[in-house]
Length: 489
Image (cartoon, rainbow, N blue to C red; front, side):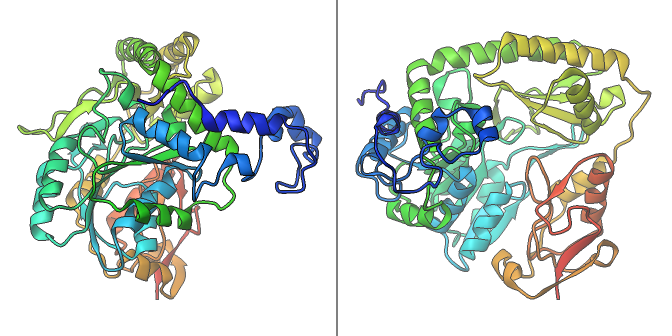
């Protein structure tokens, strides 16, 4: 057992920040002396004194032998991995590296169609061929959930030459699929199970939370420590276990997708967040769950509102758990879209959600929230229901149902081929039945509706326009106003 009280990287950074010396190395601001006054006024000087580069005592992220190696070993033990890598480019680079390390050009990878855009980037970078699975869909709530073990088994029977399976656990709504069953099926084909666990870094620290991906049998998982724990934005981790993945390939892949000038502020925040959870994680998560339970109960009692509970679909459900710290509130019963409710809560009541969709608001309750936050949240929803209710709201759920649950996604080119192919920009009305040359997704949650190589259908165009008309935002594409799209010539 390692001493989880230690923070080797944080301690080394603190010592170097305090050491008197004449700096003739990057960054150019020289421990804050060259920072503009407005930025110093906002952040203070201490943060810039610690904004250091790869000095001798601070180790090297791409060839760690000192304090970074020690910090990563401590993290591996705390999170239940055999080996852990610190990430400064977010979970995005971790997902990309996972695909690069397991798939080459022309290799097949099985993954859900509601993956994050980082997985599409991984397909483009690697040249892998996606075998997409449709997630289970709840037409009443208009929410896509996880893929099921049955879907994975069917895909592997049809594509036994696949090199890996990738899944999202939990979804952005906090729904956790039957990962242990998926792992068992995947391992029967002796290939690795990769997990985008960006929103599940806290699972390892409380028994009332869903099973962590590694404990459920995943070979690799990527976690955004900054999303739900106490690290700085962009600070994430990649963990592996077992022998199905070559750790050297992970290291080499990360060298391709991470900055060669990593921020030691981000790295040290990972070291500190690990220590915090290793020592106090259960207490912090108990308090967080109490706050979440209070919010869930009180908001669920407000007329016109409902909260997402455990989705059971079919006689043999593929879902085992719901992360209770993730709160999804259905507001369409008030005659409001999620986008409208989000704007009102933010502007009138200073309550800001994680993201809005057509019928819902989704909120993250974490170790950083307070009882005062929950009181303000409940009061905001209470007043919203009393003072902003409308008579009715008509939303065409069938567009999303057809898009996510019913439609297959034929790829005429691999994402990589389409991304680098000759393209042209056309008015939106002229792009139906053409092959897309860019990523198009409402954000958040950053799930692509179109990607390079897919045929653009009328259903897709209708859905994107409806999202935009309801107040949503389109990202990833060249023209975010959605007047034009880039297609293959």
